Length: 281
Image (cartoon, rainbow, N blue to C red):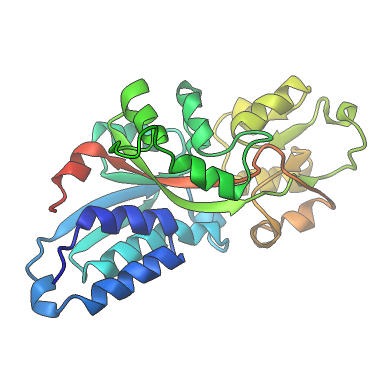
């Protein structure tokens, strides 16, 4: 049989979630493997943590990290298992993965501490790239022979993080959020409170808004509750289907598009480099 590379399994499954490339690899793996060969592979067990807690259980995005874990297990005949923990953490996952406390995490990098702001270019930038451009950018290498993509090298070389990230999902262009009151000008935003992450939050702060990260650790479900009670003026999540699963359409009646702060949001599986290197060839 052809040589099977477990690292390719992980990066491809992470990079496509349930996409065509992962499906192609699974089909190729099954067609070129037999059970005795598979059983010769060593068993690998990893732990993954994600910011997607049970508070967003009914959304499409909620399923993404579990799909990665399932694809990896299926493509390795059950020999490589990743146990998923839905901790609901946002800023600590990157630190834990880099320190080796866990082997990998699933997160949007803009949910991490502002210390790592350069990495936001690997997730969502206001008025940034469209989906196709974003994927091309994340796969860009300065030199085709480089081991790492450019964004992967920023993690390792520029920020000294012991992490290698892999694209693991995208929402495409997002909506601009649900508002309690109609917005007709920038002045209508002043003094209002909104749930919004990343650089988009910093822009809106400049326009006079208060964003949820300025108020401490507030989950999406807490933000929805605050929108319903009038403590928040606006909440944004992703798009119509997932937003409606959170009952945002019941809490506010004005829905705006586009979410210019997230024109092509992408999410990563962030892997500890030492754990990555220990994977058998």
